[in-house]
Image 1 (tube, rainbow, N blue to C red):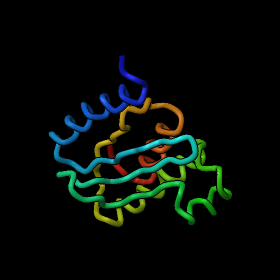
Image 2 (cartoon, rainbow, N blue to C red):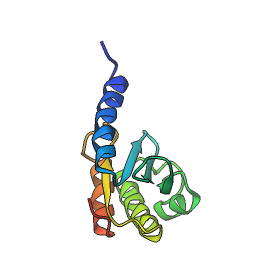
Image 3 (cartoon, one colour):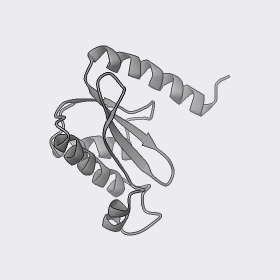
Amino acid sequence: MLTKKEQRLRRSRQTRIRIANQGVARLSVNRTNLHIYASVISGDGTKVLASASTAEVEVRNEIGGSGKGGNVAAAQAIGKRIAEKAKAAGVEKVAFDRAGFAYHGRVKALADAAREAGLQF
């Protein structure tokens, strides 16, 4: 029987195969208990075009210090920040890669904030 993490990784592999066939940049999200990470990866998967996380000093100051990166408000800040960085790198359209995480809570908040900031997916 697969563990919860193995099941999530299996789901993420299937999603990444579908995204790779599209040939567009992907917005990949990783979530831990304390932080949330987002990266925009090129269509061929060889280069990270932009990244943002709650572990960055600027974001920590914005959301109110250490230990506050695991909430919806922090995810919204990361969504806005990754959209700004992606647009600065010349990326307007991405495919959303939730990496097997449920589209709920922090993952949904990050996606909604990125859409509001101008990323299309």
